[in-house]
Length: 249
Figure 1 (cartoon, rainbow, N blue to C red):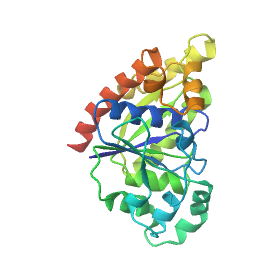
Figure 2 (figure 1 turned 90 degrees about the vertical axis):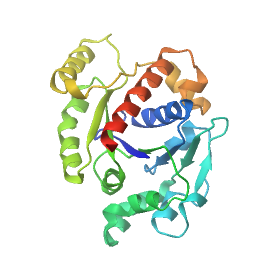
Figure 3 (figure 1 turned 45 degrees about the vertical axis):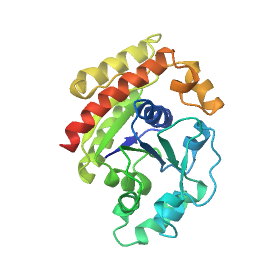
Figure 4 (figure 1 turned 120 degrees about the vertical axis):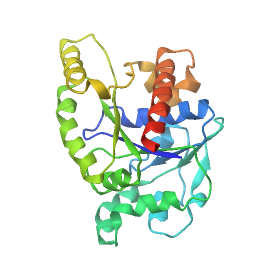
């Protein structure tokens, strides 16, 4: 089993889109995949067409229930399950630091899960707060999401520092919302590629279809399986699975 956190210091960079579609791509390849939403906004469930009801991740971390009691299968996608969140998860930003060894609470929850998963994907809130720290400490490796945007590029250094502190290996950087229509985007993408060349993973193009898929409550590999976005995520999933074996070794 490999546990991978999808992280970004800056918001609005396509992090949840990557987490949802990468998990669905793993499931497409027959990997038993658990998608964990550690973001209080709960956007992962919306993107999958699921309404989260209690118990959720908040109750799990507070040890009120067992992990499998909060995990639900994703309709029409075999091999994919969701551990969702609600707005009350935001309370952990204040409550968790009062707990003993709070940094490992999410890791403990996932370790105690009775079901064996091939892959666990954790979506995180933007920034480097309590919930993101817990997610990083639960992961075997991290995927960093970065669109061709100068502010997003600048935030990479801060996120790298957090990964070093949590001792979480960086598996790669995923360029998202990639478009070459503007000079700014082209120059920002060149900066990312020049400075992080060995870490660059297959990029995800900027397409309206990804937003349409979110509205429909479906991953792009199910919504438009023949689209270039779906093919990009399947290609990304293959590369991540390959790197996951290296991290595990």
